[in-house]
Amino acid sequence: MKVLDPHAFELLRDAGSEVDLKTSVVKIPEHVLKEGIRKAPSSFTLFGREKDYRLKFEPGRTYFSSQGSSSFVLDLETGVRRRSTLNDLKSFYVLVDASDNIDHASWVVSADDLPEYAGPARELLEAFRNTTKTVDGDTYGEKNARDSIEMASIIAGGENELRKYPRLLGFVNPVSPLEHSKLMTEGLRVFAQYEQPTSIAPEAQGGATAPVTLAGILVQQNVEVLSGILISQLTHPGAPVLYGTVSTIADMKTGNVALGAVETGLINIATAQLAKCYGLPTRGTGGATNAKVPDIQAGYEKALTLSIAAMAGINFIYDAAGMLEASRTASFEQIVLDNELCGMVLRSIHGIDVNEETMATEVIKNVGPGGHFLSQKHTLDYFTMEHYLPTILDRSTWETWQKNGSKEIRATARETARKILREHKAEPLEKTVDRELEALVKKIDSECSQETPARNST
Image 1 (cartoon, rainbow, N blue to C red):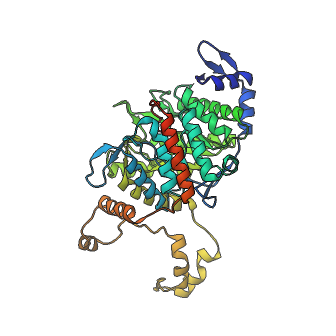
Image 2 (cartoon, rainbow, N blue to C red):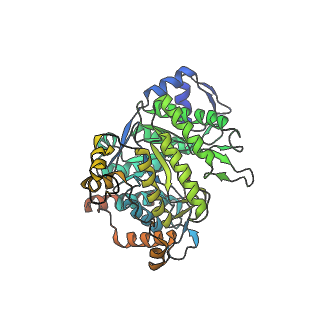
Image 3 (cartoon, rainbow, N blue to C red):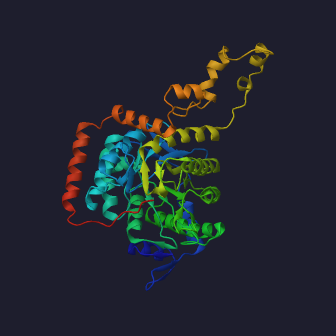
């Protein structure tokens, strides 16, 4: 791997890696790598604003997240694609907070109406104000990462509490092929130092930034992920990490990233198997699409990539809600639609409970031939547990659908999104905490006299 962060380079060298000072290339011995993997925890817990909201990353658990950092949004009123704003981000946090099947509130869009230096802190402030769910921290550069840590420490009640009850999830994307950038590696080290979990997930594109074969993508991705995990463990042994992937294929017709491709699902399956081999929790990508609007292409690409990732056992599925155009565009309606899809997928991976009560032999005997089960207490007791009950999918007849205005599902989702944004309010921050955060953000703004580089958007 080429490692462009000098501190990470030194950590790897001191651990026994062979290094080339001229090229910044590091060759890691097998025993060094294995020792680093051994130190990484097999499970960990991420907490929301309050400690009673928690995501425990361990085998058998799957969580869904909104997508992250689009620069464009489909306007909820006009449907026109435009640049995203801080107000859009706030609205997405509100939508996710109200969505019962979306577990984690990522920064769905970037606040492109803010100066670049002001974005990260202002965006995190809106996260803490508008959702009680778990949220992202910024890992693009040491300063942004430390600012995120300082803000989260206010929420947690101090740095020691933040270490014990992590409040931020960091995202680090190695640069395929085979490179760790300076800024993202700085953020990785800061988050490891403060014991905040980090997803290490390349977005290798088969045929462009990785071999065209899926097995080749997996080999290269494995090198990129494991070397990142090693850097985290050399920084702070036991730092929580997710073995991750955003990898897929490059579309050979256009050269664009094909996140909605079925190959994305296959790579997620193999990623889950590799992570299980190493005893590490996983981050994958599902609910992905290259569609430009919430249409049938979006529907089948999202359903396929999300269900495959969930059934493979991925613990944390990023991009599960809101994505269009391979993460370049976000949609309010799509959040509502994807929340429904997440609920259906969650029901599918729960499977079928088989016991004396659910097999219902006595109920079948009591009803007998020609009867019905609508009036049975067994039906009342179990239908909400056994059946997924959609909120916006329409299962009525044609005649009833016509009588109700012949609405297509996107129109229903748009109305639902508007209603949520009118009526839903996240539990407010304590006033003293809010004032302390606001003062810190103003201080961060004043310290930044020039723009910082644009952040990674995956």
